Length: 372
Image 1 (cartoon, one colour):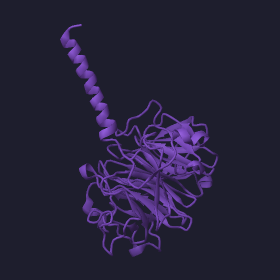
Image 2: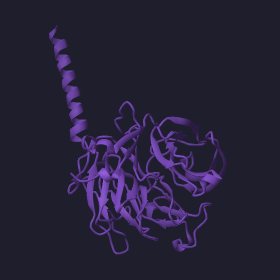
Image 3: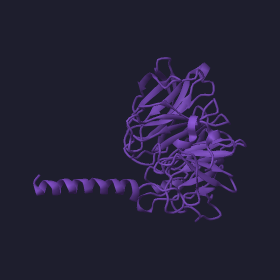
Image 4: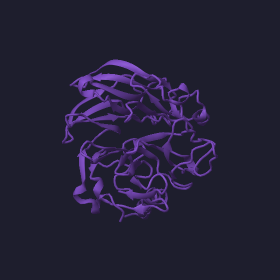
């Protein structure tokens, strides 16, 4: 073989090796300081099951009364899955613009879904983010659209999107700052907020200030969960770029100001709510969906590529990290009717390294999720 061919081949191999090292070592997510490592695939055993594969950037999962699953896929499709993970149907949701972090995002079922067939969807359009109520037919037909909240600021990044019917029967909505950090603390803007509305979009009498804004000063909250005592917890993305870090777990209180962008991490004042836990200035969870189980807050990490487990809230939080870098980006965590945790991966969103069968819906027995 000619010498120059050998040189080219050696250079190619070295280049590929260097690229692998940079991607998987230099810039790979690291476990946060002070956290305890939990279970991995090798130790979880029968407590982990893959329910469904080949989902297209799933964002939310809901549980239908007959045991089926509804899953939103960010490009603009709503999928119904059988209990074995097979697809019964996929339907296109009208007027969805999937770009950047936007698209078809949150999903919630009406408490009387069995009688009404009503679902709520959070979607990005050309002009805004909005929440609508739809009637869902047996074959995936979406009819009788009723606007609930529109005019939520939209951008390529920080579109929020989590949607839940809380224990109080109200609809809770997270919104991002849509790239305009100054709007997060502006009570006149719907950007960077947690909203609480009636199922028809009205303002509940118990909301602060006669507004649908429940709390403000958020950058990009993507997780909501309710503790057994009714406390609302939220997970929120902190700063990004070269100074990435200070992701937060926040106890959400009526009228609370959570400080973004002026106040981050422990740098707060008496008027600003301090996070119950944050990732520190040099580590990033990129937290997404959250769930409460047996006194513990679980949430998914996107850039952190893990399932995070916080015990001891509010006063003495202890963080455990499960499945670190084993399933990639974890978008959502839910507690199912069977008491199991359901996880959605988000590796096909343009920022992950998808495996052949990504994205997946996983079922995990939370009783096996213990520190090592």
